[in-house]
Amino acid sequence: MPRPFYITTPIYYVNDAPHIGHAYTTVTADALARWHRLLGDDVLFLTGTDEHGLKVARTAEANGLTPQEQADRTSARFAEAWQELDISYDDFIRTTEPRHHRAVQALLQRAHDNGYVEQGTYSGLYCVACEAYYNEADLNDGNCPIHGRPVELFEEDNYFFKLSHFTQPLLDWLGEHPDAIQPESKRNEAIGLIRQGLEDVSITRTSLTWGVPVPWDRDHVFYVWYDALINYATAAGYGSDPEGFDKWWPRVHHLIGKDILRFHCVYWPAMLMAAGELPPHRVYVHGFLMVGGEKMSKTGLNQIAPTDLVRDFGVDGFRHHFLRDVHFGPDGDFSYEGMIARYNADLANNLGNLLSRVATIVTRRCGGIGPAPAAESPLADLARTAFQAAAEAWEAVQPSEALEATWRLIRDTNAYLETNEPWKLEPGPALDAIMGDALEVLRIVAVLATPAMPATCAELWRRIGMPGNPDEQRLPGAAAWGGYPGGLAVEKGQPLFPRMASPETKTSG
Ligand code: ME8
Image (cartoon, rainbow, N blue to C red):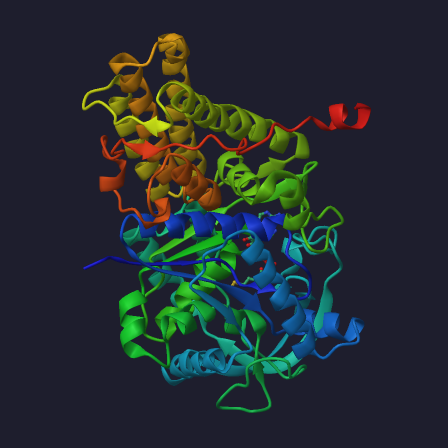
């Protein structure tokens, strides 16, 4: 039986357009989903949009739209961005869908019936951009610590979730499941938040109607975060498909940015416990992408749309850069110059060179037909090591290391060609042996790199004459040495990645 592997991104707010921060999380989730499909796992990859709440309602008003129109337009922009970036999601959830309303009402009704929801009055300092209340102590000079904007004093009658009841259950959960939140530093941060003591939290609003109605009191809607988090349960079948839910839950892997750690590592597991469900299997928390040392956000000035970079680097140049250059976990700095350097080094030079050399020699000296690899080759061990290292790195959600292991194999194979100089050999068995081995490396690289660069790897696969597609292969078999059968027509074609000039050269040239 294939193993169920359920992976999610945050669902993004529809008040503004997708930027490269959203794309970073989504491309990482996509690469992981693709890796797990190669492993033969039964994958459910979920992304979507978060459409309720005051922030969306206010943006709609400012744009002269209804909240639904605002949500429809922006949700479509996210779907378009993900199509452009080759994101292979299985499901795109919108929180305005009826299936989601049903799941939210069912799950929170359960928490209510279990005695974890009570009525009260709340007043507090609210950041509309975060859709969250803050304590005075958490503010920076009276401003939201994330957005740097003034908070507003809100007071309303609402229902409270008895989060305080879950302090010990949450600590027990994290004690029994030390890998549940990764990396370690983020797990410690979550434990720190829980140990500080948890207060009951307000989960409904009467001040707006743009939300999921509270089933036991129709004057209220659920506060947007309590509706949003439940999307992960909705898509697994909560409230509509008990068999589906049993299959996928709690085998979920949430990928999130560190801005929403508190919601995913404290509130969400507690809500699930309150409803009698198990907490998520894994929450992987990454840092912020910074531009010029500042967090890039929808409320900041320095946002960059994925499509602007795709124009210059292509879809796979974009995907490879973010997966390879941003170490998953800490904050990472984005720069256009760094992106050019990565593109030229890894794609134009290393991978592009290897394919171009091999295809040129096979075309000129082997009659255009790729020879089979030898059973024993110095490259076979390197390929084995690359696969093992890549497999461990994907398992640990470290795409940059998985790709580094793959590119080490590419660099070593280029070095092997430089040492053996096949371009100086006459046609014959010695030349065939070297070229067969190099073609076998290209075949294995096409499989190992397909989670990062699906279109490029399909083209590489085609150029070496392989039938089908690298993403239809199954690991570990497809990484075993000897899979290139030989006797296939090899095509030289245009360079996969034309070298890019640095910005200085561009302006002066
Ligand atoms: O928070 N660097 O939505 P959101 C890296 N709707 N990642 C970034 C980033 C940056 N500078 N900026 C954004 C919400 N992200 C809620 C989520 S989930 C039930 C509800 C990514 O549109 C990162 O994944 O503000 C972050 O957690 C997410 O976008 C926030 O997206």
